[in-house]
Length: 610
Ligand code: PTT
Ligand code: SF4
Image (tube, rainbow, N blue to C red; front, side, top):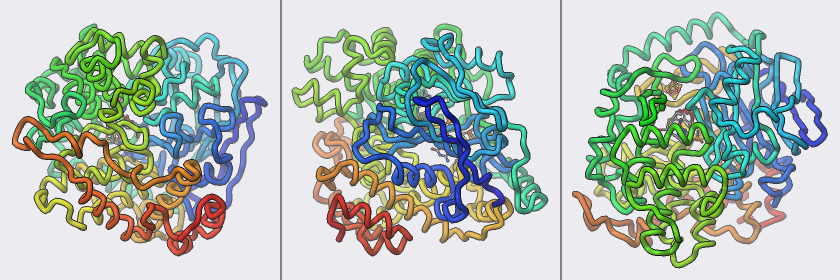
C-alpha cells in the first residue's frame, strides 16, 4: 500500500498493552481515512449501548492519506469516539504537530480502549510505544502539561492533551494541542479523561510511503504557490475567521444573548477590525501557508488565540463587549480544555436560567467575573458546574421549568455561532450534521444569505447542504486536510484527487469522493439509529425550538423566525434526495448502493429498514 501506512496502533489501557495492527487495502479504499476510518471502526467494534465514559468506548485519533505530506494544510487530525454529550457518533478535527508525527511513525491511526489504573500518557517514538506515568501531569492545565512533556521529549514531538475539564469528565471537554488548537467538541476530552489518559505524545521520523513522490512534490509546490495569489489571501491573513463577526452582524445572524437575537449593539468592539489593532502575532497548523490563528494579549497579559466561533460565543452570546475579556475566557477554555462553543452556550444558558429564576446563580449578561468563575466550575464539575457541565440539553432536563426551550442545541451538541431565525438552509445543516449542531460539515449560511435568502424553503437549499456535506464532511474529513484553502480562498477542489493519486496510486474522481461522503454519512446515521434503539425520531434533526417560536425582536430581521411545517418539508426533501426514508434512515437500497449491505443487515436487527 502506498500513501497509507496501512497500520494502526491498538492501545488497551486496562491491560497496559500496545499492538500494531495492519489493515486491508479494501478498508483503506472504501473508507479512505479520518472520519471514514473512525466510523467504520466504531460501527464494527463498539458494542451498542456502551457507556461513552466506560472503558469499552474507543477513542480514535485518525489521520488520512494526505496528512503530513508537504501539500497545502495537511497537518490535521480527526478525534472520534461515542460521545458522552450526545450519546451518538462524535468527532472533531484539529491541526497539530501530532498529525505529521503520527504518520511519520508509520501509523495512520491510534485506537485507545480500556482505562488505566493511574493517570498515564502514551508515548510513541517510531516503533517504540510506551504507556508512561502521568501523575506529575494530572491536574495541570493543557499549557503547563504540554510544556513539561515537550521539555522531556523535545520540541519536535507533537502532543494531544486534556486540561482539567477532561480529567473531571465535563461533557464539553475537548482535546487540545499547541496552546490553542482544539478538537472534539462533543466531549472527546472527557472520553480521554475517563481512560485516565492525560496525553498522547508522538515523535515520528520515517519517510511516508508514496506512490509518486516527485509528482506529489511538484503538485504540493504548485498548491503552495497558488494559495498566496488568491484574491482573498491578504484579507484572510489580516483577519482569518474573525472577519465573520462583522459579516454576521450585518446579516443579522450574530448569536446574541443565548441566540435570542442576531445583532449585538457592541459587535464592533469584538470584531476583526478591533482584533487587528490588538494582534501581536499569528500561529497556525503544520504545513500551512495561510495561517489563521491571531493572537492578542488578554486582560491578564497572556496570549490568547482568537477565532470567530470563540469570540462570538464568549462575546456577543453572553453579552461581553471587551475583546480582551473575551480573550481571557478563550485562554481559560484552552487551558482547561473546554470547548469554547459549548462553554459560551452553557454560560448563555446559565445567564438566562438565572434571569428567569430557574437556578440560584449570581450571573448576569456581560458578567466577566461570573463567567470566569463558571468556566472553572464547569471544568471541575463542582457546584452548579456539575449540572451545567453535562451540556445544555442534559442540564435543562435536570433544571426543568421549561429551560429546554432555551437550550440551544441539536442532538445534545450546542450550536456553533450562527443564529438561524432567518436561515432555514443553515438550520437544516445544523439539524442534519452527523455529530449534532456543528457548522463544520455544511456551512451554507454564506451562500444562503448571498443567494435567494427570501426564496425561503427552496429545495435547492437541501441540495446545497448535501453538496457541502459531501465536500467538507466527506472528502476533507477523510483525506484529513484543512478545508480553508478551498472554502476561504477558492483553491480548486480538483487539486485533491491529484494529490490523492500521487500519494496512493489510486484514482478517485470528485464524484467518487462524493460517494465516499454519502457512504460515511449513511454509516454515521446507522450508528446513531443503533444507539438510539427504538428512540430514534426525525425530530432529532430539528434545530432549536427558540428559532421557531421566539421571533427576533431587534435589527433588520425583527419579527423573523423559522416555520416548523416548512422546515419539516425541507427536511423531507433532504431525506428524499439522500435516499433516506421519512424517519431519516437510509433505505436498504441506499445502503446497498453505497456498498454497505452488511452494515444494513446489522442495523436491520435493531430497526425495520424500508
Ligand atoms: C471546531 C470548533 C471551532 S470551528 C472553533 S473555532 W472555527 C472552536 N475552537 C476552539 C478553540 O480554539 N479552543 C477551544 N478550547 N475550543 C474550541 N472550540 C471550537 O471548536 C480550527 C480551524 C477552524 S477554526 C475551523 S472552523 C476549521 N475546521 C476544520 C474542520 O473541522 N475540518 C477540516 N478538515 N478543516 C478545518 N479547518 C479549520 O480549522 P472541532 P484547530 Mg478545531 C483554539 O475541532 O471539534 O471540529 O470544533 O481545530 O486546529 O483549532 O483549527 O471558526
Ligand atoms: Fe490551520 Fe488555519 Fe492553516 Fe487551516 S488555514 S491549516 S486552520 S492555520
